[in-house]
Length: 205
Image (tube, rainbow, N blue to C red; front, top):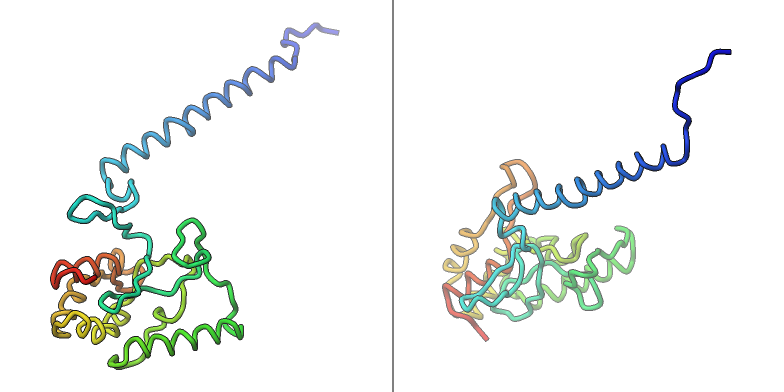
């Protein structure tokens, strides 16, 4: 029998490459890759990198363009109902109702929302936009459709003592088209729209 010169396999001969591979992958994918992506984001998309935060004239953060808020005063546009968290609009507990379309609980809640919406907007005309009486999958949707904003114009114009045409022009100026021209639907960011309202007609307490 001929002797072989092949090295004898040991536990150490397998352990060393495994440890080296682990260390290299941790450095590349756990340190270098996240750092490079963070640097690219900070340089190319600084606002998005830090949460798309919105500040007032004093530099105080009033919210994020990515997270919906609860607006209840009649002089402000209101967003979609929220099922996120105990009181809604909780970004730490995002989620929808997860109720089926045939759920009696869902049907009853939508019916109640319709009644409340009509009561709050007695001068509104046209069909009720669905997003004003149904919550989104995340519960913190920051946008409504242009139709959802137009529906609320009579109430807001009356509360602010300005013409409906003036409010409509503000809405029109804040309608965002489809992403890349093909994705999604036209939308209006509620927080940004309300800030524009205050800037144009004065903040209302």
